[in-house]
Length: 117
Image 1 (tube, rainbow, N blue to C red):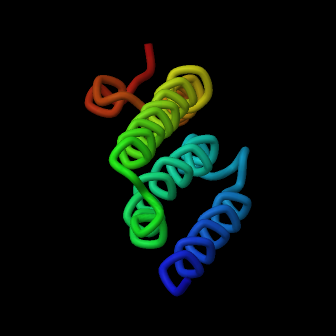
Image 2: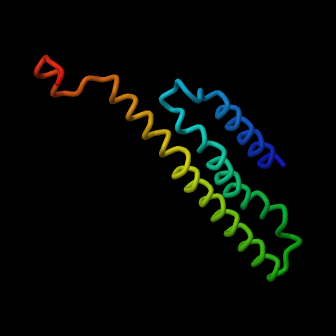
């Protein structure tokens, strides 16, 4: 119960931290969409051992195999969620932040020559 409670508190703290990331003005805004999928991936991965300790006395050999495959599928699903979130939400946000940052900073050619083109 202690490990499960600690895992639950850690997930709640990470979600709260995700809500504190400013969507528009922060340079780390592209991380906001990734926080929940990464938390899910970490929670599923960490809960494998926690649940295994609790459930081992009740498992037969077949039950243990089903338990292992269930967690393999859950971890793969959470990993796919992280990848899709990166491609469809975070990467475009990062690209827009980089392009907005390039528009504000002078390039090295302009700074070196002293006159804009």
